Image: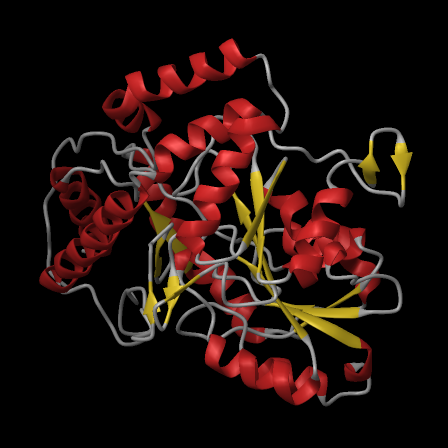
Length: 388
């Protein structure tokens, strides 16, 4: 590895919301004003307009706005009639909502290990669960398109057909991603998106979306998000209050017009990170040899919600960066099967070794469309200085 001397690096943030806001400020303010003038603050025409625009981008016939990405996962599963007595297979290497939404449906979460290159749920490991004693209870698979790259949908489609299962996409990090040219959101029976402020398509608060190819799932999701009502005050079933605010919908529709450009900027930044790391001499084919760069499956259109490396001595490196005001983050430091609140699921340390290794090695670096090239250079130079 190259010895690099770096003096007084400038601080680099993980994400700077102000840069995006300045570029589209007036459009956002105009959209907010239109909602205020309409006095329709929950659902209404702004939500319907955004749902239609989002469905078009995702190449899905139906889209249902809701209150958060977490609610979107629950809605997608519940609207597909996943419930008590059913099991759902998902990954232990994801945000907590992937599991909590399954529990909220009354279903049993089952986990399978991840692919070591993409960090996504492994179809091979999933089939091992399907062949096991508990496999007969499985009604759905919930792959997560982690970091902005779709899971291996070819392999999961084979499992869907072989075992007669539902496929539901946890696409919370993947709005604008695609697999073999088909957008996330149109790959499975249903999909769930998050518009949390850090996402590629970001609200100014919480917001989510369900897309589906099924008219029945679409109809059911609309009932569930509004307390189980088709007619006001007549409740056909127990639903939830998970309606999308008109303000968030109007903001999201403005940003949606810019998303292809922003996602391409992320891909360009990822390619520049790759080149900078290769030039630094820090890259290895495995973690024993050096930093392992993100892998992009050639069938995937990666949108780099996060740029995640595997790093030797990860925790020491992160502290070194923090001391020099270089932001980083760990997604995720403790796999779901080791979370205290999920101990009742019966899993233990060692059950998913690939996920556990990833949790000790992954490090997300600053990544957003407005990130400057000199800031990327600072990040890589500082990492090189640590290993020197």
